[in-house]
Image 1 (cartoon, rainbow, N blue to C red):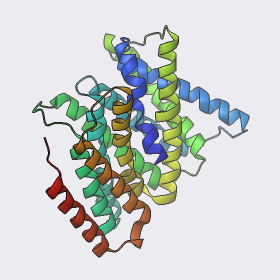
Image 2 (cartoon, one colour; image 1 turned 180 degrees about the horizontal axis):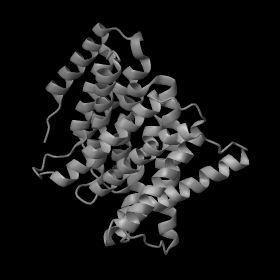
Image 3 (cartoon, rainbow, N blue to C red; image 1 turned 30 degrees about the horizontal axis):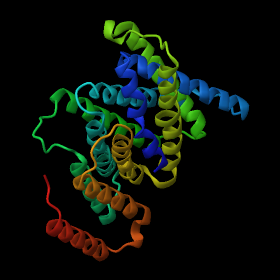
Length: 304
């Protein structure tokens, strides 16, 4: 849950930098560069070893590529749609994780997981403010779907790989390889990918926010969660990401808080609660609760 909330803070750092004319590749360069410095200092102070084997590097490199591609495509989508909408659509990745785990690793999908996914996706649908009839950008949607897929693959590889190292060391090398890809993109990606300088304290503050919360904190907590509770529960509890985006939008950017959004948040938090409680809840109780909630919505809510 901490990882999800931290990752949902991406718009806090990205949007102000975009408004200052900073391109996507530069935003990611400072995000990963500063995060790498923070992690290196932490490892030095705590005297953690930097040593890794070639076999471990062979797994860490693709993890770094997947994570930076997920960030790059998500941040690129912000140019084509509202950050809140993009963060909401991103949540298809838990479904991707659950399906791939079932298809390729024969992981059993429990009734609790199925109901949690359905409730969470229903909440996401309610959080999407598409009632004005405005069509979403196809390019933006494709960017978000690419971000979801690469993030889902990242979570599964972390869960199923043979890597046995601290979350701090794993995160350090993931970010290091990701930063290398960003630098390569700045060299070969054309004029739009050229790195820019941050020239004001305002810019540096937002770059720091990106480095600390959606990067260092989110990655560390996500790795711990995947190892402790598995890929699918971790991914489903990522439902708190769009909730965080809504809270940020309402409290900091003056976005309207509607009854539709309130119902969506209730559904998402209910899905998270189901995952936390796991098999201690019977299928009959789940059905009863959902039925009552649906009856209340049908009777009392009027959607615009």
